[in-house]
Amino acid sequence: VQIPLERDGVDRGTRTPPSDASTPASMSPPTSGPALPVHKTLLASAMATCTAEALTLPIDTAKVRLQLQKVKPGEAPMYSGMVGTIKTVAKEEGVAALWKGIVPGLHRQCVYGGLRIGLYDPVKQSIVGKDHVGEVPLLKKIAAALTTGAVGIAIASPTDLVKVRMQAEGKLPEGTPKRYPTALGAYRTIAKEEGVTSLWRGVGPNMTRNAVINAAELATYDQIKEALLRSGAFTDNVVTHLISGLGAGFIAVCVGSPVDVVKSRLMGSKGEFTGTIDCFVKTLTREGPTAFYKGFVPNFGRLGSWNVAMFLVLEQARKALQ
Image (cartoon, rainbow, N blue to C red; front, side, top):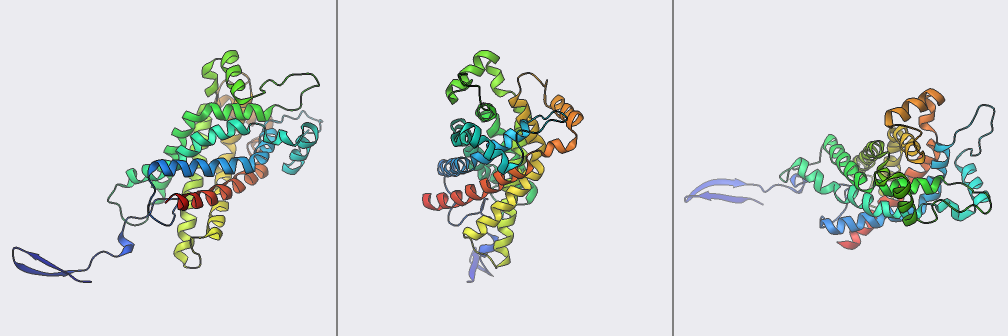
């Protein structure tokens, strides 16, 4: 289509309007259709993250138990491997114990999951500018995800702490009451016995861990999905979402495992460590560098399956809300 250019009665030739390829790139994780309003994006994000949380919590419980386990020389470990840990917990404490912490876990996902994913597109758009055209550079995707991950968990950190405490509580002697029978009771107990600020214990490594993992997840999902679609061999369907989600989960667990271990230990302890650096040094000194990858398999099983479930639901929820 040629559009005549005319000004002051003078014919200045014609120009061709820009093609679709030069229109602003869709924000990511890329989806089909028009962009959703922020409130609908937050809703879709919360729905997706809560669904993934409920489906994969048993794997997360196994991961936390493995990360918090401390074995003395010559002593057989109580938990061994992801499947073995799940079997041990189910046998000794009942199957329901695998979903310990589900309530604060859902609290966390409604707040943190909604914010980190729901605000990712707006923050990324503000970083590249409203007039940006073409694909968003990887570093700017990472910057946006780091920002929303850190802000989201800074607000939701108490829910993470309560979730870890409830997951870490193992089988109790008969007649011994649970320390944290309910999520709301856990918030009250911790605030009363340890102070309100203790609900944000470990917020530093938690912000680091979640910012890093959020960047790894969202930016990787973005890149993999864009590459698959650009190749022409894939379309915007479940298979593409599945491959992208698995890739995002693998990268996230590779870069996030060390800070995840430190975060779990800080939140699961009661004054054993003075801070992030102290926890890191003591863990390294006592157990060696491999301690930071304790629970790697269940962590990948958790994050891989979590990302697949989350992105699949997110894509469908966004389409349903358009």
